[in-house]
Length: 198
Image (tube, rainbow, N blue to C red; front, top):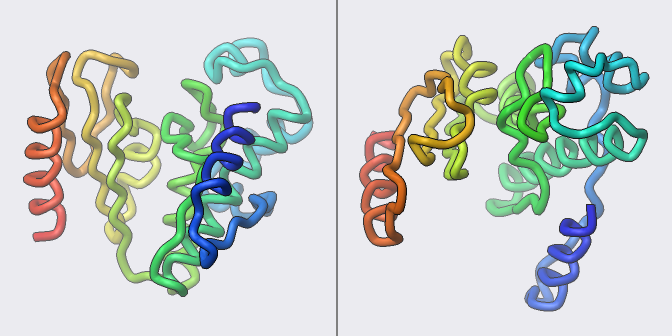
């Protein structure tokens, strides 16, 4: 997608000399299948998603979609590992928080957040994971995929009356009213984070 290239160009133009920009790697199939249904992963890779599955995702299947989806997850996983090693890292892609274990939704094919959380917990890079999702849409797929993982704590701060209309249950959900202004948002986020870190 062109927006990712423009974002990268903008960051590169503003970045301090010590900032290292890396190409997003393709996530390994094994990392995807650790949290996603292997049959679903096969259908995505092979281009055999049903028309209904493609409609739920909101994007038609193409080899470019598979590559972009794998790179989005790969970028989040690489940034997570780098942050744990170096103290700070950012992924310019990702946030595919609507994807579920066995299906995509809301323009999200694979759930990069769930994949990264599982990977760092499974390898012992981290003992616990806190997911703070501040998108206007609830992180429903992430909440569902990490619900049984006792070492993960999910927080979603989102518009109450926005997609998805049927909300999942995060550990903490904060549904904001329409028109919530910046100061009110920041105050609610501060209280929510204080609770999450308590």
